[in-house]
Image 1 (cartoon, rainbow over the protein chains, first blue to last red):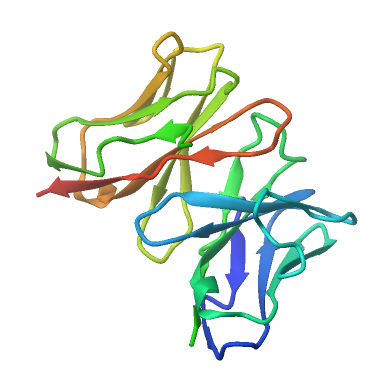
Image 2: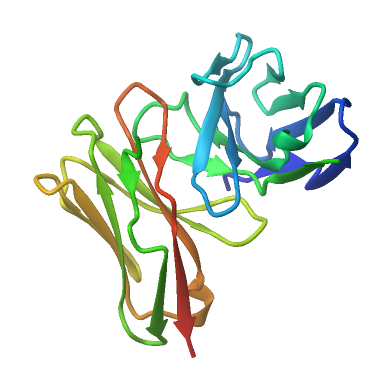
Length: 118
Length: 112
């Protein structure tokens, strides 16, 4: 149980284009989903917290207009990197919490998406 | 400001021996801690967690110890197996914030 999928697993795009990444909880409903990015040999950095049916909460320093998050259903959240630039190249990982994301609720992670912007 | 630190970037252990991975934190408000295992190009996999009301939690070969006064936790894997070779991240969070703070990871290599 508690499987989270991401699509695509890898994407290469030209600078200036937009890229959409999907995150799905396959066998449970996720009230809260989280988006992280990880640079090589660094920690996972939380970008935003996404709650179904409401606006995402972004971490300090994360541009909400650049990283659009939509949590349209209890099993799907999407991250759109708009007008991508080479510095946006990174490993993006989503996670989902089984019941609202409070302490004690474990986050289950997707396999990640490697974005390369040329 | 790195609130969660894993000071050992790598660790090598012989198969069958104990692996001890360490994690230190600075924020005394953290009250829930987790360990994740990660393979290259994959998302982290949950291993084990511990609440601040406990000082030990055990699950099979994995045991997590928490020393609140020292703001230190450790993950013990015994016996270590080659399949345990991966990067291990510790994470900490505070009740109600929903936010995990991750350490930088320790790469464990279990030698056959």
